[in-house]
Image (cartoon, rainbow, N blue to C red; front, side, top):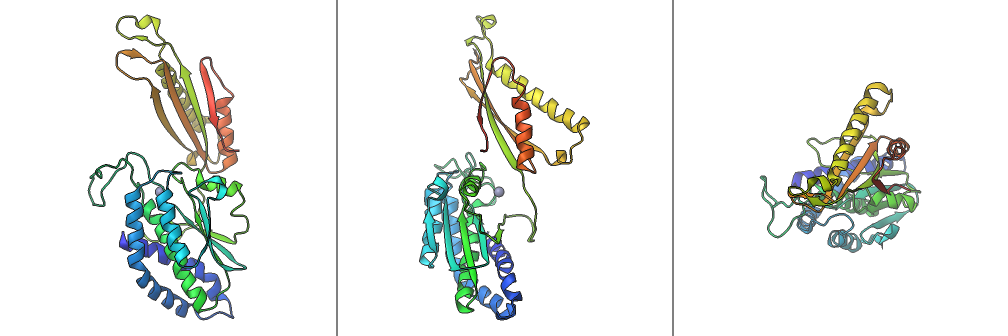
Length: 324
Ligand SMILES: [Zn+2]
């Protein structure tokens, strides 16, 4: 984890400093980089502590109060101007240093996932008294991002650089919520560039797109009955859920087989099932199904989501949560 954070911080710093290095009136890049590296050595103990704290807090989306406060505390101490609770999300924030153009954004994430409790060890070992955990290094995502900002701030002052460094504290990444509402609030509007990173198996820089998503929740209502004594009196809501699963999967495969679409290979669907009521001896009275349709482009995702909504069938009730 130590090497991972250092690599991420360095990668972002190199990207952030590149425009300045090329400017004729700025000091040579090598001098700036040397200062960054020196400052990173000094920052490392604090960054490792922040990472470990956020790992231990393991707060899920929109509940990352301690995690965001931990990052905000470090940024404030370093002299960043912080606006908390942006885009009507208490755990979202924007921290800024410097002024004028260019405005360089760096994204920080810090949300955990349910049922991923884990000790900080190399083998599977749930942490006592905690059900949540960081699945893919989100404790380090925010930590390394503020590390990059702090190191840039240091050379910014020393070398009298121009421009604005802005850290975006983006909650609820795992549920695809935080950045959407920050985008809708116009918080990214004046950026010249925005950088992000993610833990992986190798160090590299890349430029790519990700997937948009549309979510919909469908509730199926049936009739409860005793499964052994009077099964004929019941109608299982779970049957409806399963039929929808089969139908949606066949639809997806058929579409991929017959409908030429440049995006089809990039499409992903995630599904989750929930049941209201339980027990092997019960015909389920209500079942719930949520589907998320992901495409390269948001419009395409909305189009896919709508096609399913346009084909209602008896007994289902769509309670949709769609992007505005
Ligand atoms: Zn991730």
